[in-house]
Length: 499
Image (cartoon, rainbow, N blue to C red; front, side, top):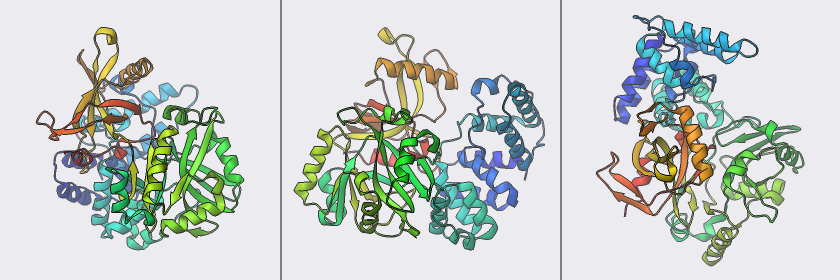
């Protein structure tokens, strides 16, 4: 397939708001791919090269200034091979060789192809919101059941790999995917709850739930197969080499093989949580203290489809001393007391989970609900304004967008400059200048890759922003380097907060 056909397909998807039209356009494109074209093309359509980050920034690519080809010359496999060479070019003289590789690729690309490559290699396409639509398109193109396709994605951790299996071998290949100890799988996600009482009621009453601390930590997934240990982040990045204390802890667990889901928290000397950023950055400091809240595999038995009640029994058996503080089948009064205690100890709140629910990896369902004393949303930074007064010379007021669940660009819902410390302003100015797409002297536009947690008092209907809703009294809590734009809250979640 010509690379130009993938670029045109991506443009057609971006040009419609209809989820059905997006799925149909993508499915038609996927059906036309040869087997060795599936993984690179699906990765590009999802917004990221198959090779991952390639270390090419905006300044490098904009400096190329290579005249585009007037006709399509590139095939999908040629572009993928060029990116392979780019990814493996390191060492002395690599800067020159990488520039030569990029110049050769750019000179063979049409203007539309150059623009697509620029956005692909700098992360502007990596919104992730298209993944759900693309997964539906894979199922439609392959004729495989959507639920089976989603489950295979959950277990493989890779949409390109799942797509190739579905499109070449069909349902039989998807059914063969299993939880594999040592290979990260998509983590189950929680939905926000209005209150503790509403969460307990929705999940069938306190007796049918477990209520646990919600820590302000970094999500981790720990795999052990004998002496082989792997630790993954929520985005499935392998951080094993950076967390020797977690590796040692896993080796001491009472089991032969296990997959645990939990959070790792950095603690002060008196046992209180350090800021989230320290949990993310102190990977090799010895400060990390894990708390596990789920067990997905134990000694040869997969537990994904088992009810949470059974998974907690397995967790207690192999890692009881490292279990997340909480109560199983509490009374309403005890659940409320646990929430008060969690907040009093400096944590975010509590999680309320249905004891009869399986582990729905990669899904944000209602069987896990998070209860916090204030509203927070994870939103995407779209742009930032230069400050004035004491903030002159600093990038200050950020423009905030919610994820479009149908794969479109993030939908703007407000701005804020509140809650920013001097340290955060320094970081924000330095980081955003490096990633700026444009700067008109007032507003700096950014690729949609920075996720920020915003605390707010609520939302209100508004004609000012395209989503018809605006944030009230929004303030910055923290940036979320552990989250991708695909994990940001949707515009539907924002609208759900309307009175």
